[in-house]
Image (cartoon, rainbow, N blue to C red; front, side, top):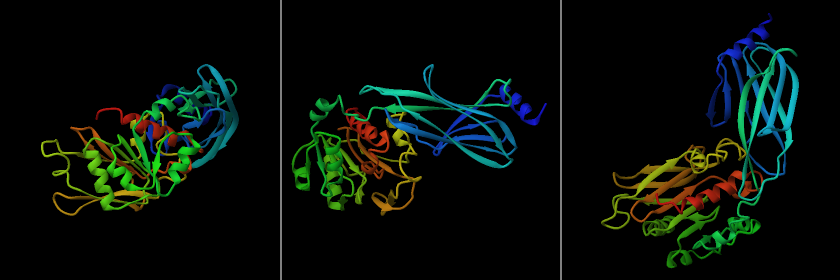
Length: 339
C-alpha cells in the first residue's frame, strides 16, 4: 500500500474537527494537512461567484480532489481535479458557481464539501466542510413599512451614508444640522460615516442615550468622548455599562454573517481606543490604527438606552457583500430588544 493510500485509510478512521478562526473555517486533521477557505461565507443571490480554498500539507499528497456545493441534496457546482502537492507546500483551488434565487426575507444555506480520493476505486474522504449563506440583495424589500414607522433620523454632514440609504431606497430622514438631533426627540439617532464628532457632540449623544434613545455612530472620522460611568444618567438609575468588541460582535448579532472576509484587509484602518485619565473618567477615541477593537457600546440598563460606535466600513462595501447591509438591519432590530 502506498503512503498516500495509507494516509487516506487513516483519514477514514479519524474525526475531522472544525475550528472557526478569524481567517475562515479550517479542517484540521490528525496529520499535517490543513484545508482553509479564503472566501467570504455570505453571497448575494443570483450572482456569479468563485469560492477559493487552499490545502497545505507537510507530507507529499497525491489524489483526486472533489469539491461540491449543494443546496440540500441538489448539487449546484462540482469541481474535480487530480492534485500532486509536494511536502511542506500549499496549493490553491477555486470552484465557480452561480448562486440560486431567493425570495425577500429568505436566507438560503448552501454546503461546501471538499473530499479526497487516493484512487478511482477508493471512496472519497471528506476533509473539509463549510456552510455558505445566500442573501436577497434587497434586505428591506418587505420591510419599508416597518422602517418608515421608526422614529429615526440620520445626522450626515458628509453625505456619504445618506447617499447609500438613497441607493437602497431607505426612507430615513436626514439632516446636516446637529441641533435638529439634540433639540428633537428621536428614538433612534444615526450619525453618518466620515462624520467629525467632537467631545461636545458626543456628550450630547450620551445624554440622549441616558434618556432612552438608541444611538449608532457609523465609522466616524473623529470621535471623542469623556465618560464617567458613576455620574452618567439619573441619580437613582443603575450605572451604565461599557463594552468593547472585536469583529466577533457581527456574528453575535447574526451568526450567518461574515465576521472577517467582506472587507479588503484583515482589520479596518481605524479602531476604538480607550484610556483612563482618572480613576473615574474614561476617554474613548477613534484613531487610525490596527487595534482589534472595532465596536464599543454603552448601555443604560434602566431606560434601555444605548450608544454604539463602530469603525466597520459599511457604505463602500454594500454592493460587494451582503454582510454590511444585513448587519445594519440586525443593529436596527436589536434596538427593539430590551438589553
